[in-house]
Image (tube, rainbow, N blue to C red; front, side):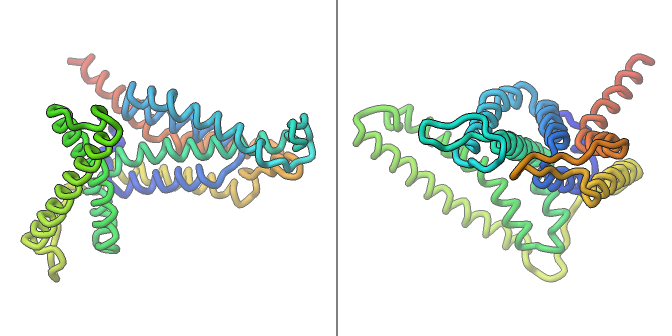
Length: 296
């Protein structure tokens, strides 16, 4: 990963993610949903490249379509009836639009959380909340760390068992079940041993003792201050639009969108700038690097 935004102070990263995630979960206006979805799609590709592009197209896009079609099949509210199902239930325009909006919101939140997991490491999370909520921050960071670690370990165990013909893809159904139980048993034993080693390591390093300090490499500088100020200003702009009713949309019993004004376009631009801050920072750093290289 070669991302300039990840090198900023953790408070800058966390503030930006908090603002974008909260807005993505609560703003149902179609323009804001589109901005959030497209921006999250772009930033995930910037972070993870082709891997993210393949995941977005093969998994999230079908999920978006599935959720958009699922809602009108069960939700029949709305005044504009388009046609009737064989069961006699109506399909309404309002339920379709609400399904598309809910699906876009759900997928955009998944995209932002995937970016969050890439940028916000356990070290950053502990740095931010270690003194305020030490136990919670430790448990949360350990959970984020153990999930990929356990996934890699069970894959290693499965490959080792496969070399001796004892994986879940060989033999009869009963034999496959036995092989799966054996792999799970090995994994459980390894997890318990790892937990004991972790506890001993934490005890030897003085975890929980009064006055214990922790090392940190993070320093808040002028670059971080500029980025944090920009995030807060853009967030205030979007919040002002939220309080004035410019970011809401009514779906039932009929669709009603707030009237588009010049202030609306300012809000759209502010939210677009907020969502694309990491991409803008990456592009600016790339431009500066190319400028330096061209002068040498």
